Length: 492
Image (tube, rainbow, N blue to C red; front, side):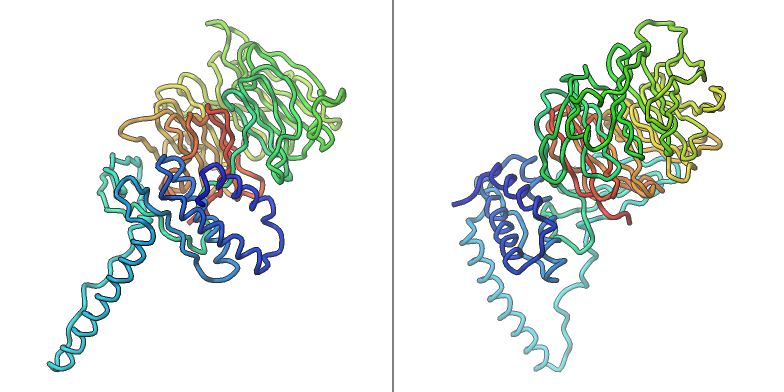
């Protein structure tokens, strides 16, 4: 009996929970049997999003089998039966019959050629595979033109050409590909913020439903939760001491991020401090050494003369103290990031301007202007501090030179869709983005070349992203109330 989509997802997640177990022959056969179940289920599953997730699962487990056996299992999703697919048994017989006839014809042709004393070709040279076209970025602007179904667009310089691409997902390769891993459910509203613990064993999420939730990655289950009002931003420092949450009406809370609290936030000593800031706290950031944290807000009143950025100093005890440094900014702030050395802070706001601040004096150092036309929701800085990446509601992603403020690269779809999140991975070679189009995209940071296909899975806009400390997993939080874990591709 064929399994349903929900049953397949449950089996996939159960297999992942024991993924680190020894790869015995029995275990390999179990995975192969699961792959066969997924392949067979294709004939009964028509929803595009579900089929894309199943294809991702097939790539994931096919690569797992290859790593252990050096052989690929059959891993093509059977076409949906009601849209002209040939029944599986008939399909196999038809393919076998065609192969047999083709073999006879080929042997006959070769024999005839030998008999004539001439050399005959049997077809043109095979063309390079277009399953994964390589996109070549323009020097200044990357623009992907709309592509009809079954085609991929390859930018070359300032223009683009279309290359036919097979609709079938190719069999997994030894290189790690991006793909679906599992989904966490439990939030009841938009997931607006995500943050990993330094060891990567737990994930914190913040939602508009008013709760911070802590998730155990190994068991894929909720460890604890705490009521905190609508959570707009989250940050966990790399030393594992402090969890910061920001929300509506200036609601700031500082939590102990030690293991005992991450397993039970309701304990009396886990909430270290409450803070207050004018406006709604959409942005928070922690310096790499954990000694500084910054919060940014959009003011509740027009013409607010109080700063919309606050700086906090974290002492040895882990308790933050509001700094005397004053940032004289009246621009509403929606994104923040520290430079790697913590000496400067970069902010993005509702007016589309990026500002760089001195964290020792609070003075504005420079502005990146003539860029975004509306709110900057995503902001990142490369690990070497030389480039800034930004993504906005105007549907563009931009790369800037940090020292000069000059725009280096830009991506814009001809039919712009708002971006709500953008982050660098740990080594700075990859960028990940999410937004109103409900897909996760990976980009080569050096030239904004798209890596692989957009990943479908969410049914609502994507508002938050977080890379695991190991860098091989990306999480995305969505308006559909779910958190999806994705395998991160290897950077080319």
